[in-house]
Image 1 (tube, rainbow, N blue to C red):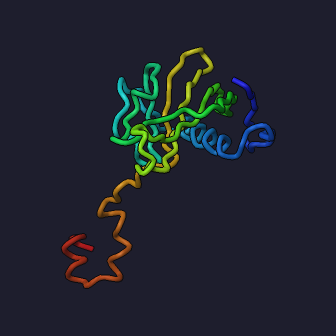
Image 2: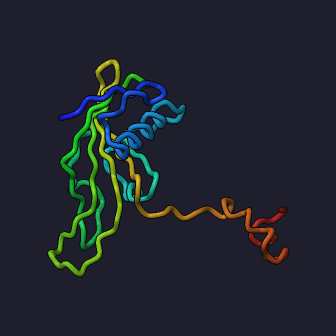
Image 3: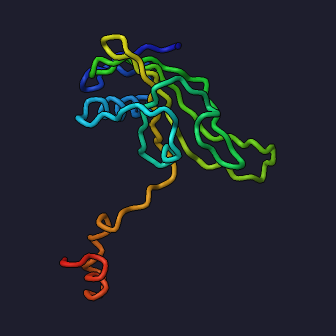
Length: 164
């Protein structure tokens, strides 16, 4: 790993960490600081392709273990970083982006961005985490669309949200 950066609470000394790496580290640190910590999975779930999805994986994995498309696969970028997060966790991480696997230049490759972290907790336990910064937009639930009721026919709104 070629860079070690300390991330104090207000993110002061990050001059050696590129902005996109800093942003990913902040997301993961906020996730770790939240009260909701996921139990590590044995396998990487297809939902990792959804933007904002975070999955903890109990074992090391390689790019072939991550769900991909029929015409593209995940490609690891060269930049690896090591940071000490305010939560007390050491994170070694890198970015992955899609790359054409067919060799056909006309095949479209999605503009996804996935971050792979190896986390070392203060007591020495390690786990792996994937964070999808850019991916498939998750489908909103009907309740998340409730704000639209004021622009709809009231009868239709009552069918979608009974008792509104």
